[in-house]
Amino acid sequence: MRTPPGKIAYLDCHSGVSGDMLLGAFCDAGLPFETIKQGLAALGISGYDIQLSTCTDQGIRGSHIDVVIDESQQASRHYTDIVAMLHNSSLAPQVRDRAIAIFRTLGEAEATIHGVKLEEIHFHEVGAIDSIVDIVGTVIALDALDIAQLYASPLPFARGHQCMAHGLMPLPAPATLEILRRVKAPWISCPIEAELVTPTGAAILATLARFEMPAMTIEQVGYGFGTMRLIWPNCLRVCIGHAYP
Image 1: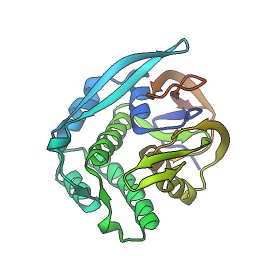
Image 2: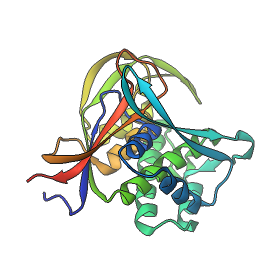
Image 3: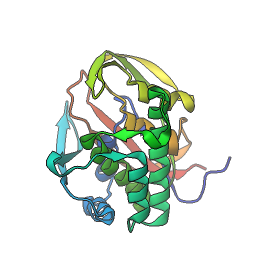
């Protein structure tokens, strides 16, 4: 299959992937932070702030995105509410449609896990706004950077448990595993006991990325950092360029 015209991007997910790591990596690779902030304003939602900071971990410098949420201003949102909000926004059609596709990937996995219909899926207040910012922000970044195709490395299969909305759950989270099972995403064993691949990060990759390494010329590199301290730099690395030859 031929790669569409435009740039391509390869994600080195050695520390996993999350929405904030994706946004941080694209900003670090040269995307103006204001582009994301102005793009998100098209949603017409409030009660959050998105912040960019420089981060250094074990000698590697990169960027970190933090979404600060005012929980008192957040409404409960179902999958259908989020789709309606995206349709009613002033986002560019290609951004809106890709964001809706990612939310459908996420919603269908949650519906399978909980044994309910897609329309019944409820995104908890904080999780909803966080996912909206991460998913829409990532699609805005891809559009602004003219990235026609996204590629990704195998993902680290980390174990452990984490307290979530429904109680203590095994890692990877059930929704993450279901999302990536559907696209037969490749995994590699990882000694870390922590959530390295989030449902939001998984949904973005499952919807938009090919899990393969392309032949490419690398023109920009960015590092997006997570918040955990690991035995190696906890970053997602993005390489942006053109298909080769």
